[in-house]
Length: 267
Image (cartoon, rainbow, N blue to C red):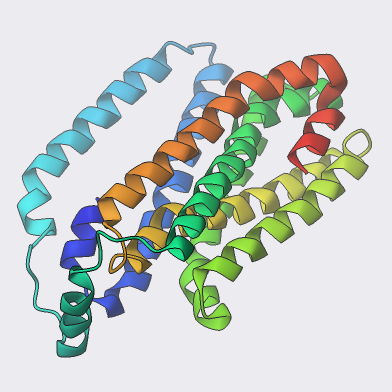
């Protein structure tokens, strides 16, 4: 999808595309957790599989029907952008040292960001149940706050990037805010579920914002330096590494040193 957008969008259209791209993960997570809460409440978890099957089938049909209408290749770009694209086309295959270092940093950021982001999505219901003794369905419903706030994180990216002049300090900005509110979680983890849940929501906002920078903004804004589809694929792969670590390792850490130890690790 990133490769298609890179080939079809003018530079002026990138901010709108980034907002749309950033909304997908948060929206999907919200629907998944909302459906899970509903099925858990009625003790019919097996309907989750039916829900997934129906949803994927509908999306597949819509994709096939609308593909040619949605993507018109070789759109006419403005003169200045076309000149820039042509001048950098010859050097796109040659990556300088600075670009390689940036790519390594982006890959590490992708792993860490999704370790935190998906770690929250996966384990918040367990945290709310174990630490504050909330009901299963209520814990899942409260967890819906996370993707709702996460939706806004990616929406802020184009505006903040203009203020900060680059997506690199923007990524650092999101990580700094995440660290600050991770400290808040550590301080209140055993005393106030309201403060903890609000902090989780803000961390979700920040990590979704960072994820939008890594998986959307970086590949599209660097399209004159490196193939956008290739870069997006590499960075998304790193995101899945972080997600996998969060699923398998954070629970293990919690079993051995408690949830406080988990958040110290994330910090």
